[in-house]
Image 1 (cartoon, rainbow, N blue to C red):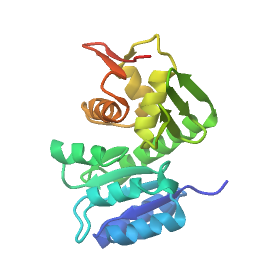
Image 2 (cartoon, rainbow, N blue to C red; image 1 turned 90 degrees about the vertical axis):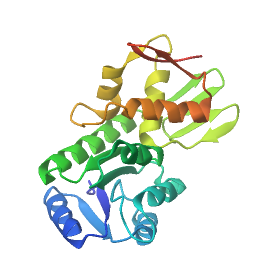
Image 3 (tube, one colour; image 1 turned 180 degrees about the vertical axis):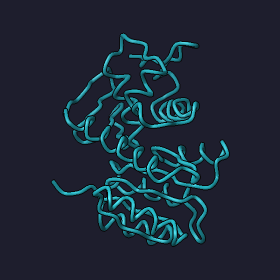
Image 4 (cartoon, rainbow, N blue to C red; image 1 turned 135 degrees about the horizontal axis):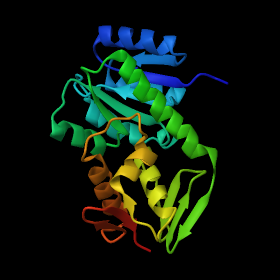
Length: 225
């Protein structure tokens, strides 16, 4: 089986070298770019499985780079993880809103970062193992083509938004607890902020309609048919 491809986009050469060394030891095929524009072109060329992206970069910052990457059809299934020295809540929210699957603060140790990457890619493989189409009212979720259609309008959602919607749609009679959502969408080995689910739910509501997902306070979420 071909090794998974990871693209590192960071303007700090020492970060690129350290991460490349550790990821290659883990068996990944690693590519690098030291700015957002080159990173986008490289991503279009190699179609990586995962992109590790810095926030603070000259010319085009990581947030704008992430937004541009999410506009590329061929990269819709690519995981994007921010790796930044900025740990403020507003920075993390901006990252998720731009389409990132995860946000990691740079003080993290390489071994822990690689564990998170392994968990994300493993979860992606599990999600893609079974191909299925769910039809709920005017909502059609095509797992094989990673596409959501509502009232004839097609939505190409970021990976975690799609996984979250698919989970809720898998049983419309069930209220999914926050703990179960974190476990099934993000995985036990992936540490995410407490507001991660809220951000993704809000983004789904903005796209599919405010009444699409019901919140049961203190319990969890339910897809409304």
